Length: 450
Figure 1 (cartoon, rainbow, N blue to C red):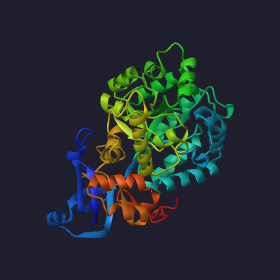
Figure 2: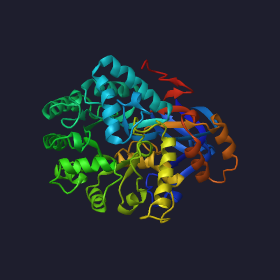
Figure 3: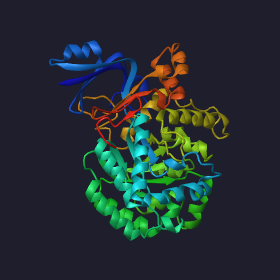
Figure 4: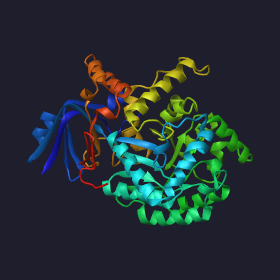
């Protein structure tokens, strides 16, 4: 039997891009999403969809709740949740003082399982249905991510973190060992169900030329792999990279010289990229993931969203927990808006030049736009027939201030803006993966013992 979900439906048409979002969004104040065997059959105005159906359907009504495509978190660390909200002066000091010691504990299987379970619960509680995840260097930390995601039938991109220099000994591994372990994991997990493998050199400081050579060889042998890493997050970090790789043109050139920039490369942060580096990213069709919460928390800098628009680069948003302080993609949009406003209105090189991040742009980046950035838009990101039924139900009435605010909302843009500024995990009523409810009003994993 078909299953239907009635509520206020919002998504973007598949041919949307950031230049035409006002013409490409779909909003049905009384909408219906129809699902069969985990896939979307139809969506649209309730009366029209019902009239076009010729078979029995079981409908669950969510009243005034919003039904949106599941959120995409394109950069988050499964091995850092316990270190969230740890006081830090700057990125490198914070890594040494809190993150590296915390990640060390993921060599213990029981610890890794317990904390990764908690991590996934937070994703689902916040309406996140797809994530690009950084585990630790330990094989078990990768295995538990894949195990739990597989059990949930959740789409994830992840892979063993590589580190072989300039870090504590307890987090270093010979690159040949990293290569061999990674190859075994690729054969076991990559593109099994909804799982994808990402080669994950942490960043240039903790990676030797040999490790980059081995990473490049894996990308050549397995062309559909992802590669995820960090770039130009912090001024001090950029200086250290330029010191260690002094014979390269700059931070990005380190990755480019080894052939690591492809359309399946996810570059976290990118605050201090130069125009030449933006041009290279556009040329190679690599992707950037903006991590607003962690950039504010660590004082790393203000990301320039309009450089993304200028160079036509695919962008997604990442919570970057534990540098980020919230799993909520709504709150990460809140932070992205604030960064955009600060960048536009306080920086001498960009005084009042552009509008701040608009609500349509913001929600595009965590739904269809994020899916395009991850090259997954043929499977997720909106409510087109045939796509996987990952969606989130949002109830503004669960937040008193938000409820009061949206009484005066005069457009869908105004409604969405209020959701992203005032909303958080409290307004996530339910989260669905492939049509299965996995979170509902603080009840997790309805069909799972995770």
